[in-house]
Image 1 (cartoon, rainbow, N blue to C red):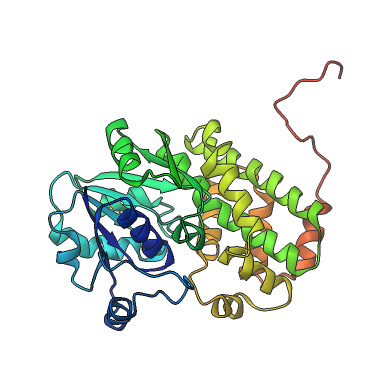
Image 2 (cartoon, helix red, strand yellow):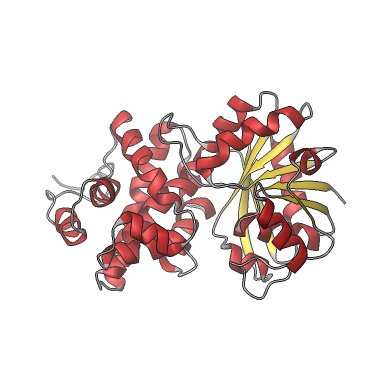
Length: 337
């Protein structure tokens, strides 16, 4: 049995707490909001995990020191936009060599840093890891079979995370490509917004398949240019996470996209979804990285135009369809010119 502190009591942090408690670990769940701590502790219910009871064995607290002290593992599960400020708060209670698993999916807009790099910058000396893959909190909390990837710089750290989370319904693979894992998990949210917009416009399965296929091509191009591995983008945290996020109504990014496709503004869509829409925050960063690495990402460009430049969703689709003719795989050779 391990002692685990889960920093962040959103749907994902709560679902992982339930999973870890079910694995026999001693779990402490932290929230920054006093009223949320009180509600979770008293009712043992999370408002966004309908019908799922939080086990009594899970300690719910607003005391960050209590959530972190004497823990074998810390899980950082706040939204990506809060990772840096939460890490700053954690610094006072961190033990040397602490293993910190990031489960947020995003890229910081200003610095263009992945979450693991932010954690390493704010918490020097930690052993950072990431857990990612096609894993909706709603299904994990219900114990439905799910598969994820644990990535870290060191094999021993990734295998430690694997051993903590692995169960009969939650299978964990390891992967040394920490950068690729985090890029896949972040960039897929931007493509999922596009998939949702297409749904909101009333388009069909052909459109969805095209966005998923060309979306992973964009993600892979940028990821490889930045140093990620092609195998990672063909795996669970690449195409796997992209498929589930583009196809499922559990996906807040897809739901927000649907609303935008139906005519809502970005702010109206985010308010209606009632949860953090990570793709909105990652879209600008993805566009900036594409420009920095001189990588073509037309879907990302059009999502940015819709979100931040007032382009109508229908015009964005027309821009994608009417681009100059090109070959699908530029690196492949023809038998004859």
